[in-house]
Amino acid sequence: MVPVPFAGMPEPDGKLTNPRILVVDDDPLIRRQLQHLCEQQGYPADVAQDATEALGRLQERTYSLVLLDVMMPGRDGASLLQEIRRRWASIDVIMVTAHGTIRGAVEAMRWGAADYVTKPFSAEELALAIRRVFDRRRLLDEIQSLKDQLAERYRFANMVSRNARMREVFRLVASLANTDVTVLVTGESGTGKELVARALHEHGKRRQGPFVPINCAAIPENLLESELFGYEKGAFTGASVSRAGKLESAHGGTLFLDEVESIPLTMQSKLLRVLEERTVERLGSNERTHVDMRVVAASNRDLSQCVAQGTMREDFYYRIAVVPLHLPPLRDRREDIPLLVGEFLQRHPLAREKGIDRISEEAMSVLMEHDWPGNIRELWNVLERAIVTADGHCISHVDVGMARGGERQRLPFASANQPLREFVREAERWYVQELLKHFRGNVTQAARHAGIDQATLHRKIRDLGIRAAAFRHD
Ligand SMILES: Nc1ncnc2c1ncn2[C@@H]1O[C@H](COP(=O)(O)OP(=O)(O)OP(=O)(O)O)[C@@H](O)[C@H]1O
Ligand SMILES: [Mg+2]
Image 1 (tube, helix red, strand yellow):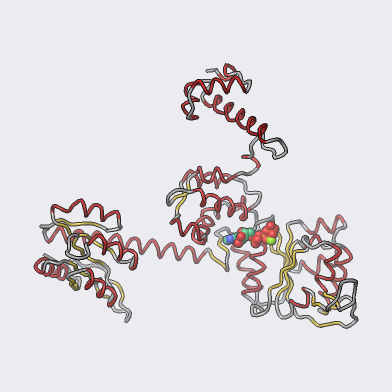
Image 2 (cartoon, helix red, strand yellow):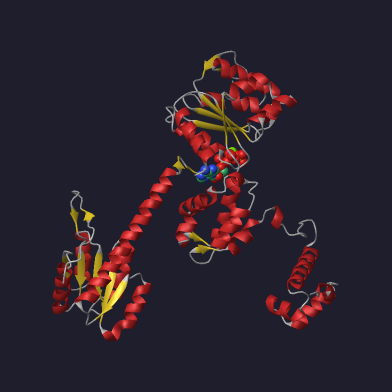
């Protein structure tokens, strides 16, 4: 037989060698026969007579494939298989089985064996099985490496996107990061403004310094000034110690003014001065401290409109919007949805724990059609809940549908203001009506679908004052 040429794998020294095989069998004759056949095919092979010796060899050198006898005295092949799959996921295993133990071999496939051959086997049979396993492995490796390349292409900092406008944003962020230019990030809620602000910080020369986020909308107006500027002891009642403000603590780093549109006009003029002079005066002090910081602001409003409406000073606007970056909403970059789903499944600890790595086509089309008013954050929330409810390795449309919960899905009767009894009754009325609508008034079918008997459904229909006849039409 002609040795099968097979694209080898590079050894650490870069030389191409054929993949190495480990033969595990307690029968010395078969062991030698298998080793010989492997080598005839051009694959270097070592042998082991039991599980202990096999594990020793696996620890010593790199193998691509194990030919494993199912029946061995001591620890059997199936149990060794499980350990190999767990510890060396990249090693394939072909089970070798005597005629009477085929069931064991089939079982072993479930534990992750790549194939099995039955004794007695011909050289061709074995060669074919080995080829198949190596071909499949090579394809999987190629797919993985293409996936990795794609993922890298579409990744920037903690963000992924294949959308042209987002790619342009990534490019700008990369080139702006090393400057001190003030950047204004705009975009709807949940589009990733904070991620962009962090990327500007982390890719720039100030990354060793602090990143100080301040949510201007979350701080009550009367506290904003002391929060930003800090105060000296005794500056006001309750100021029992001196405290630096956020502006000072951003020294050497980046100040992130989130929801910048909600800064009151008077505070805007005080901030303007800081931005122009890069100095800060604590409340109750007349000393000015120099602060060296980069400023990034974010807003989900169109700030030029705020200027037009008089809620934002024009000079303040120009000071923070030196370079505006706009993040498009998710509904305008739906091509990112599959990418984001993949990213989230990879990142989410529970998804990893449950081994969820896929989403059904139906579920994906639900996600593709949704308008995502809450953008990526909303997508994250939907997926998070879907991961919790998913059964198996794949997210189904049911998981996604249940989780969607957006305006369109809101139950027409849901209100927490009513007594529970009333709520349940209305929910039941809604349910029964939907059911009758679906089955065109056919109570028998509706009852079967609902998992209750017909008499019960009839009673409910009566009690709830529903006219089943109204749903009967052709
Ligand atoms: N391109 C992206 N790739 C991966 N994750 C993203 C991307 N954009 C946003 N996210 C994630 O979406 C969520 C929302 O992002 P972020 O908090 O940056 O949005 P935001 O625009 O600041 O929202 P808001 O206006 O509500 O404050 C975060 O969990 C973030 O990690
Ligand atoms: Mg934000």
